[in-house]
Image (cartoon, rainbow, N blue to C red):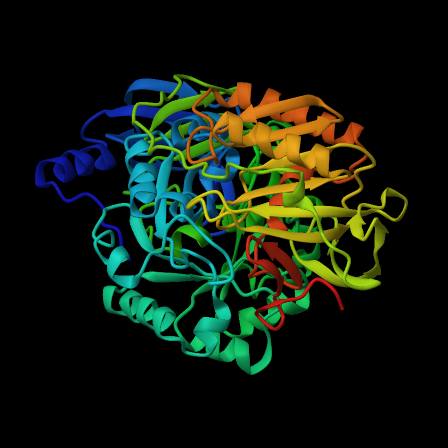
Length: 582
């Protein structure tokens, strides 16, 4: 998708006059050091801005005059940062509040896949994300959710076909088809996935990939379908094989999946232009603590990547990959999305400009974006739970358990000896084996998938959430059935959200009234509530950095090796349901 530059005749004439120096610019930025991502250079420059665009850049001081002049006092100035793949819903706030959270970190554009809300509300959910992100200082581009649901081994709130999505391809901020999560369906040529791929080809749009651990001829088949990118690599060798197959590698560093350090060895002067950064899923407390794409840039530099190369990966590489041809660089005609900072080797954002306007400074937005679009009604149809809903009758000595890996969303499929009481399986905190349940919440089917998880670490209590990727049923992990029941009932009573309990006490809760995924409150309030929940989970014994994100991904049946849905355990390697007992 090629995006146009200025199309209005009079506006272009006015821009040309400023560029020639025959008319004053609206704003001139002086005294800064430009990081030119097109040439790979850094040098002192002044920049003339006109109607949201860059009119001209000069190495000679005093070339341009402006109605407003800003002294950058020797700071570096670069294009605004772009997140190449993410889900706004995972920030737990709606788009205006997400904009308030990330603009101070220098993110001026994101490419988002709204498949979290699409799995709850279908097309209505996607339209809500488009409407609520309209006109923000943060540019929100949308990839249409290609896998709703991700598989047929779970119950989601909606199902989207190629025909359902076709009507949205003409939307101005829709760039293409989002991650093809049903990669076995693509590789095997299943009808629904082929239809969506063909629709992408016929529309001339990008198609994003999602192919964890895919290799060999299966990867060749996946790439031959026209898949253009992947964000699921967990090792440099995996990323290199995908680069060789023509995929743009999105290096992910989020709240749960943290792959940046492992993938940096693949980045060099020959490959870097085919690499970008993505966060995928990042919660507000992590945004506040670490930052956003600026955090990826700093980590890459610490890992040995040249600072200019790291900035290219955060800007022009992503823009060019998605055909955003007037974004990602500071050069004549480009949109004036820019950031400034003092230290090239440790970029800490001091100012963020969107369309030439100062929108954030010294860690704060200049003017808050407000929530103005009504959200679709929530779905929380999971009544009639009782203690028996969590009972697992013992059918043998050995059972499969989901093995949690810290800082990863892939899991191990383990076989453990079960602990039992009166013929029923119970959690065993001494061996870190806990019960997990996924409860269908969209259609009131009464489905409850039950299993075991190892490596989650709770020694008391239970945690529950209506965020369970990607169908977002109600997921609960706990030490006792009574605590699991209380946690589940607490989330249902909130109309969706997250909670932690111990005994008969609710230790913390965060209501998420928008689809059971997002709050309508200021992001700072959500950050604080989430921090209290994290502290509660850690007090209960969980050692994971973000237990709730880790728990959410235990229900995602397109990430190897073993996951749980409302229909039961899923052997992701075989891509089929499997029994709990061996």
